[in-house]
Image (cartoon, rainbow, N blue to C red; front, side, top):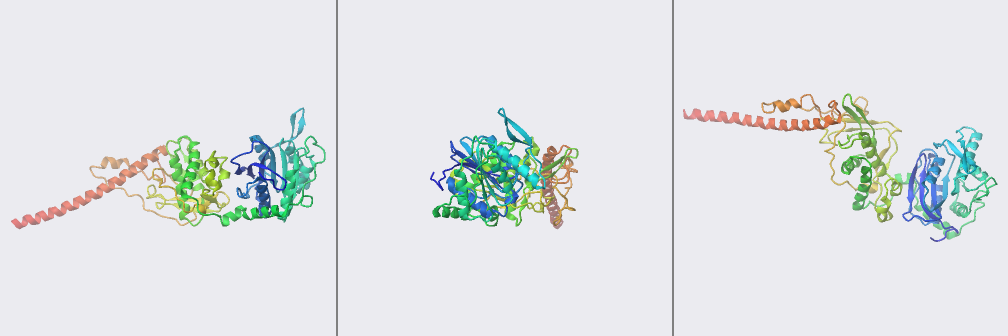
Length: 538
């Protein structure tokens, strides 16, 4: 790898964190020594800092030779910095001995309750994590405790703070003694020259190992950083122009349509990986269900809640009824509550970039390395926030199951993630997969009176007049309703299968009755004609 700003870095991976962590870049050829892992703050407070964050990401990509391989994550949630650092250190990535942390503020949402404050006879000395407070004193105390904790974790850490709010934390990291910490600060409104100089200068420094408790090396700022040459500044600027934020991608996702054949294999790989983790789940059923949701989005002009198919289901075993997301689990799945979770997981994974999915779908980036590099495959969906919405599922959407029923769904604002189609995958359609063999829940998650949209009425299922030949069979379906009706048998899903079978019998009998009536009418006409002919001979 070539030097950039007198720095040569071997990047292992980039992890975006808020309350959780997502991998947004994973090196397909990870370093075996002297590797760097990056923790990138994507909390909600990062909104409004796109310019600075693009330049930081671009400088990092230039220093690691990963130009064009990742973009800014979607800012959301709180800042769980300690949790992110602890989880990354626990991974013990082979060949990694450096960590770069890019953040804009204090830790606000870590679940950790105790921090390392030092060591006594080789054992860590733990202290309580100071509570959040609204005073400058509590903010400083919490920042100091987090800084001490980070400094007592073995790998060398480079902390780059962005904006005004981070200054208390950067000061705390600098004052803690710097045994494993080097700090830098990039102010709001920094230029490409400023960011490039700060990033290359801080990554050239080394922590003051063995000197904990002494005053650390001064924080790198634009005024103290070593300037870059014009060519290097221009390289960062070009990369910053090519780096996109989540908001920009939502407004105008760039790129041509995905390759249809490669995308089909990519989708199948993810779906099959999820299906393999749920005993009794056939990938074909999961594939068909997610494909059905995709077709709804293709037909709709508005985003739809993933919970429509991947949300919770409520079972009333006493009444034998179910309400909630559309499709009931196939009989082979014993953990029925895991079925909808698997559907939701597929949709979520298919709404993320491949690098963000690889950690949860092992081998994805290896299997599709060429296709990912050539930008041939990627997300089918994109997240569209948590708006309020309503939707009625009818025979238009499920002609085999909902001839005489409507499922009403209502989703509250700020509760359920909605999805739209990624325009790059808009021309990609699932193969001809049918959901006709899947059962449907007995109701939606709402009713006509609380639904909020136009109420759709359908005629009830007709009851056929029993004939002598069909009287026994007709008695079997007396008082039953469709699979998606308002009630099912006392044994719940087991009875739904029987009801579906009986419903088909009723339809066969109706057709037989029609034919029988036609025969009877024809017979009557023939009798009249025969009587007229007979009268003519008399």
